[in-house]
Image (cartoon, rainbow, N blue to C red):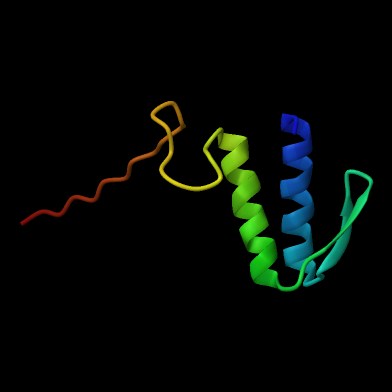
Length: 74
């Protein structure tokens, strides 16, 4: 899939979640999911694709990463 198709899929999936629908269209195709959790899984998949991360398993060293730190004063 091209980056624009991945972006369109993410937008459509987020829209479906916000509306609470399980059947919707994007990229000229009709998609039906069995549950909201299936939509969330698909959304996670496409977001990983957008970042260039494999669908499962650890991210490669070339993937974008962010680190957060928390500090406390004694």
